[in-house]
Image (tube, rainbow, N blue to C red):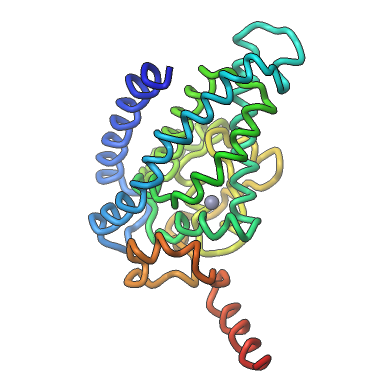
Length: 281
Ligand SMILES: [Zn+2]
């Protein structure tokens, strides 16, 4: 099933979408770049290789295996009532996306998870290549949460694979630096997460980062009042303030980052912390 659906259809769709977004964001740029494009692409791709390998060789097989086994175990919401397959598929798809909204909040709020998600947020520009800049540790951690979500929802194997393909496509789309016509984006944003909306989540201003956690559907942020849309894209400075030196953000540093002392959000907080530690000595 993974080979026929994910490899035969999902992978070509995702590669095609990447090429399209890459070309479109070159021609219609939303935010000004602060770094050289090719250097970042190189860094983001190298950092993404272990995460990619884990996604295809571990994450997806485990998710599908759980959903297949669950057809016998029959755990989870969808096994508690009878309805047509289409209704159950819609419920599963929506709830899988809702579980990812919650997972994304946990990535920001739990210090142990932030260590890994930080690597993604230290990108000082935002474009389609940022969609791949995830630390492999985040991929491993997500197996437990997202696996549990599949069981609790009672999602079928086919929906798990389809959701994963749409999830990856949505991630590419909302990270891209594509300038869509404003009105079109506004309409799209009622339903899905768009580049302007997700751009705000990558801001160096803390309260802006602490908003717009949704992945595919934007309404989870509206329902939970974590949505923030009134920020002009030219005003956004992308990244994490205490990791703003691009010379420092090498491939080696990014891969090691979760296993080092994580800095506070901005330098002032960090300075206060250092002074406090000095005083204690
Ligand atoms: Zn985030």
